[in-house]
Length: 210
Image 1 (tube, rainbow, N blue to C red):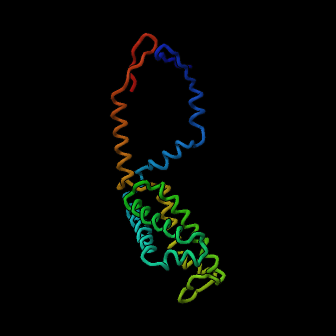
Image 2: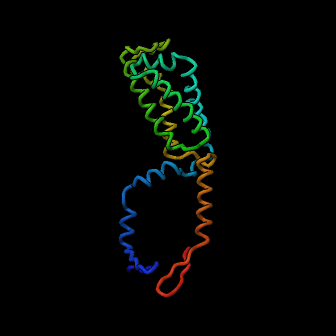
Image 3: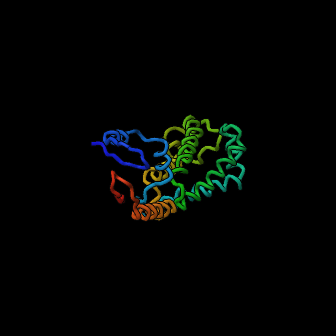
């Protein structure tokens, strides 16, 4: 049955079937942005440990790229990254700022995406050459120095970082985070505004909506 709402002399008809169709629409850009910027706080409180671990590693690795040239520009030149100086500084800033954001739990899902991309690029740009024993970077000091086991051994840090970031992307930062605090404030504001209600005219009667 159509619902008729009279507002300022206009009659608006809403078909319930249209609402059902809209609910089944695929994720829109607005919903995607909301999903990125308003993560749930349902993850366990211990998620803060994962945030501190992965965020801390990114933070000090970013600082290290500025302190030691061989860890920044020099490394990027050896593995063939285009514009090595620019890219090294860009990645260093990303790791410092993004690592701090992860530790604080602010914009967690948003910053997780570039970190996933960074770790995938890091693996693809260094590990195939290690597998074939042709890496321009120093080989491991002890066997295995090439092959599958060498790749798995040298990828342990990359693997831990990317899996931790994917967890934060999926589960959110947990209740002990800035994202969760902001979410609770938004919910509190929504409840306050909805509790006040508003009066609309339906036919000749005034109805209070909540």
